Image 1 (spheres, rainbow, N blue to C red):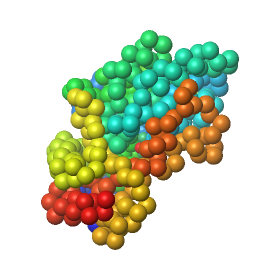
Image 2 (tube, helix red, strand yellow):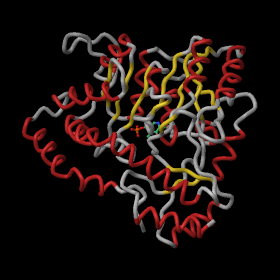
Image 3 (cartoon, rainbow, N blue to C red):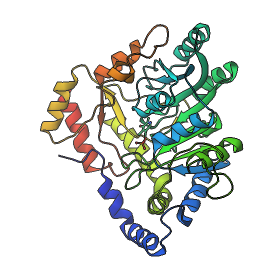
Image 4 (cartoon, protein in one colour):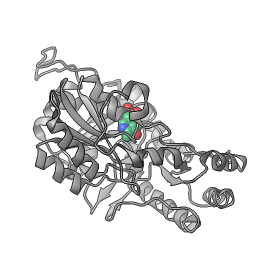
Length: 371
Ligand SMILES: *Cc1c(COP(=O)(O)O)cnc(C)c1O
């Protein structure tokens, strides 16, 4: 079987630097909030074109912490797509708030601004519900429709989180999601485009007040003095060793984003005539966390590819609003027909920055032969 994500190719490229970086942290002994964490935060803010960048333990906490900073509570409504990874909805439930599921655009799989607008209008008239925030997801690595979504959140006075767990590094008209959102969140889970060797997360934001709150909340609510607490927080820190690994990976990340786009173009050229290639929003650059196509008979297609040694994955077979613990949450008026059509048809193909060449040619040939 070919690899679905070839992490080994990336490791081989920077193995010496990774080994040295890890050894340095182990020898230095500053395992928590060591100098590599500060350096990574400074590089992330330069890369993400924001005034502040803060790391945390994972991409899930990265979404939860701003909601905590804004004091989300029961009765508050947060609007999010259902076609996403669990974290996006889970963190809303942690705070006892209500997630209102919104439909997606059929081409980009990102939040549909029209469905969002309908959901907000509905929630405004619903007794006991107060619209507070929107979480847009940069699904599969591409930027959501931020100009439209941020116009809606501003008009209704709502906060906007860009869940860029899969999409850190994506741009729209040359701007990163944090240009429109109050905060953009990142996951360094190993399989994400910018992954570490364990769990990790971060946020980028231009909101100085929010950055101060985030920094306190991720470290037990600590204030200026050690062991003096201004608020109730949690333990959500990025290990120094992961920061050291990420510094080496961030150095090659711009090059890898280019390589992923080259591979995406090669897929489109290789089978775009027989199956619909993914559509990126006009003016957008994707990080291609996933390369996702749609087929009529997914099980048969996947079985034929597997026979030819090509692995596939399905993101996501069961969207959040269909999951048992989340069934009780409301849907945008008009329901989620696009999400429900996509869940039965989507299939993701191997994608990483080291795909081009023989491996990709094999996938393309297998796709053509399996349709
Ligand atoms: C991976 C992911 C997260 C969560 O990141 P973790 O680091 O695994 O906690 C959140 N949102 C989306 C859309 C993701 O894909």
